Image (cartoon, rainbow, N blue to C red; front, side, top):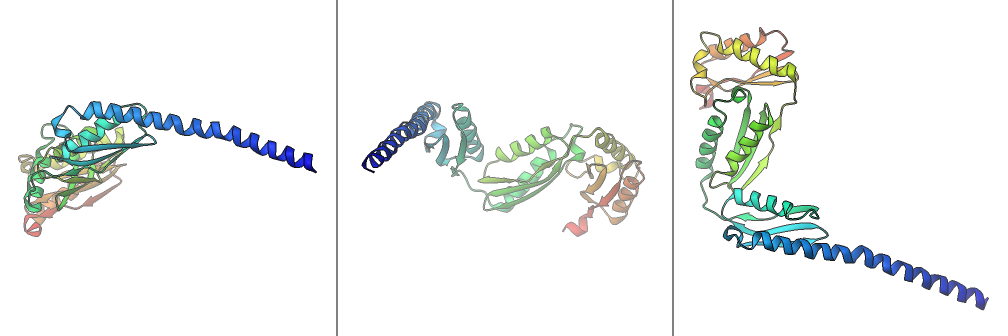
Length: 257
């Protein structure tokens, strides 16, 4: 019996001794890796004055950013810089606050609406992007759907570069890639803007009839002068071969006020 107890004790001790190096192996490299990441972050953030109020901490490869910056653009750039600082970075928690100039919500929303309306002027996708916008306490909620990723990136960049934006809730969707939808978009465009009554809506890029196409389904958005124009646009859209359905969400100037 005594020999059995001694054997069991030796086996338990051997097990503990085998576990200890494994525990050290699992914690020591992580600590060393965190220290390495922290050193690289200090090298990246330290010399630049825009990051003087930004603090970084690292735990198990995850970087946490805190502090303040002057603009939302700088907040996003700080996150990108942290992600690129080391291949060993597993993730970034961006808790930086934007402490720059505050702009009243109504003023900021009006400014953003105008900038977004004119953002893609001259590009073929401009009439096919539908964006929604809301601002509360400097936080911008951007929604809607765009035809492609260049329009998506430009919309986010426009918001990020606007003074007064404190944060962004991004709910913008990108339409699926589809040659069928691309063909349908341009057929709808020709049908609507080729109408003698509706041609004038192409004059001001801020007030076009927006044509949203997703998997063969069409939806019209925007503001027109009167109900007759809205009805004509809906009729033209429904006459286009290949549209599985058409939803007419056009509003009038009087209804928008």
